Length: 431
Image 1 (tube, rainbow, N blue to C red):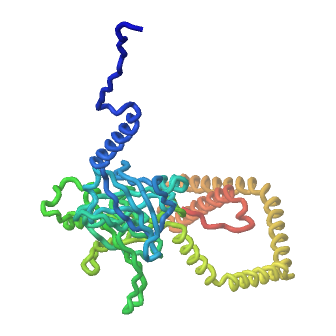
Image 2: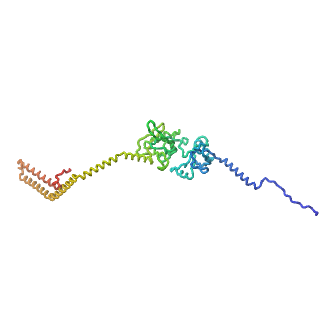
């Protein structure tokens, strides 16, 4: 075949910078990883180690860390400490709260142990405890000692004023950090409880140290001290209140089963007391607690006093007296005397019944006699007239007759009022 050759189409190869859709997934994954890395660097928190006495049911990722009720971190790990007596908890704290991680910061557990006065402890029985962070001053730190309950007030928490209280009863169940309340308001905590025996006097006591927060005492009418020393102002307050009957007392909330605390309140009829000092620390006077232990102790004292009474001897004497009275009442002489008295009374009643009908005529006759005597005297006076004064004996006779008439009339009146006088005789009348 002859003729021109036909042209063939040839494909050209062009290289592009795009590697292809197959690489889209690795590139996207790399981008996400890079973004997470940058975000982690920007929002990176801090890891701190807190030592507790016990794990108390804490679980990584489930146990949270709170500050003023707001979650600021979580438990990332927990392990037994090298000494075998403690546990070390690793806490992951958010970056925004790293500024509070200083040597004075406190960590404690809320709900580590059941407390009927704290409803959150009931919740912790199922959900586990919560780690609470309380910021404090100092240098940055990453190792802390934690408590299983809210710690006691300390100077780094702000202004405090310390006092001592000496309780007569057992105070061993009062723990550090226990509440101190003034008329139901939380004003401080217990900072120390110890046993004290005075070898000189032989006295055994349990002095308790408490720390009060002056800002919670509600002091008005006086400005806060410029130098930060609240002692004079708070001492003056308690000197006045103690003179009015303020006393410290151990109590439980709820009663019998709740945690022990120190209650400051007024006691009616409290003996006179002052704000004394012991080793330079003012002592607030106390009274016996009103819990079941105190009530039981008082009941035991009452029972001891009752046991000391001569009850058996008194009962024997009463039975002996009763036997003598019984023997006396059954004596023949007593029965004869009572029979004789009954007969005498019956005889008197019969005599009165016989005499009573005759009293009326007798009284009328006496009054008639008195009237006749009066008429006789009047007639004699008319007859004698003026010559009566010349007779020596006759006027005297008439006077005696007049007195006789008066006496007879008086006798008639008395018998009319007291007819029984004919039997019993005349009795003395009250004026």
